[in-house]
Image 1: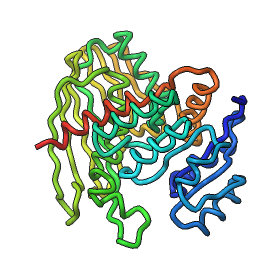
Image 2: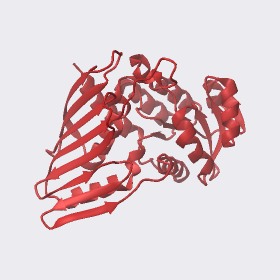
Image 3: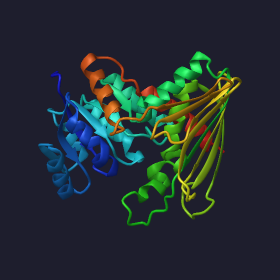
Image 4: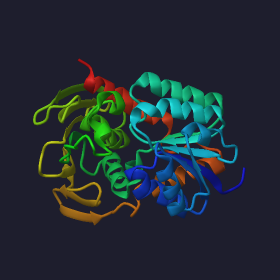
Length: 322
């Protein structure tokens, strides 16, 4: 295998255009070779825009291409399992968008297929690489705020798409798996797992408060971590005020992040207030894709592997269980 990994991209939607394709084009050890999307004519336009040499009529054609070494799956959630398994069976490493799959059974099948074919499997929880999240983990683990007793995350964005909106699938249960708790709540669950470790108990409250749709527009999850720390995650598609906050309260201090995507961090202790600015990469996906590519080259596990995606799915299942 060369030290420049040849990539295929399945799905050319909003995230692919803004982040995934630019990263695959710009990273030094990546080469974007081929793309596929449902609309073949649009696939050609996308391929030429980002320098891919091939555009495929079907994703099956892309996974069968022997030149491709790794595949990025950026399609609606209900397609992740079949596409990942097909790519793995064709000998491709797979980096799959989040959430990993519709349920833990699909996650298990994806992991098993990649293990059987001896290929890498990664899940696109790019916040794992945020400097501010890593700094928070350091502060918590060092005991600077004492024992953490409560963590609170709010994630709010207004989202009420018309049927003609390309992202309308996100409110179709069979395609998305759930509403905001599934779509972007999963990102926050990964952040909490990264900082505090395993979640031992979960309770979920989900409702359609403002909109008539197949999935919740608002939800709250309560967590008990194995360490004893308690946590809450609140998400909604129905609040006009956007929020992306993280607050952690400990026996000797607290941590406050008004916007995780900006990376500003305030630590409060009896000795005073400390401010830090730890912004993420300009392209949020680039560190994730770089790590996965290096994992292939170095023959190691990616930092965000399939097992972590499966653990997030397990927690999600407990939230949605009734």
